[in-house]
Amino acid sequence: MNILVLGLIVWGVFSLFQSDTYQPVYYPDYTNLTEYTYGPIVNSLEQCRDWIDSEAVRRNQTGNEFDYECGKNCKYDPDWGLEVCEETLE
Image (cartoon, rainbow, N blue to C red; front, top):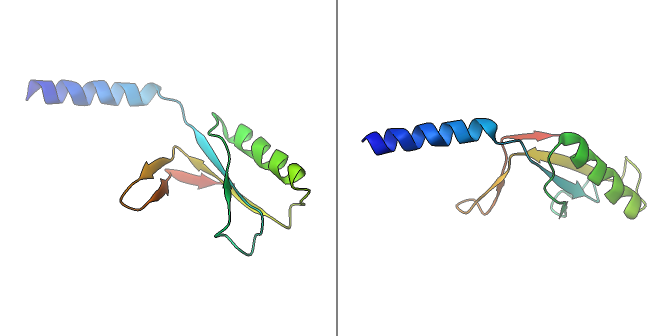
């Protein structure tokens, strides 16, 4: 029992010091959200948006042709078969 409590305390302390990560998702056609490209996992919302901007430039698209999202602290859920995020930001 003491080992379980100690393990939970260590896990809790570790999670407090873990920084947030962001997963960019780029949708080249805002009317079709089934087609998308994941960007690299980055350490800030600003870096996520920068990647989105660079992807739009690379594809020669303007802001009204595509859509995007930045998932915060995403983890793959094998039961759902997709990334599940704490929060989705634009």
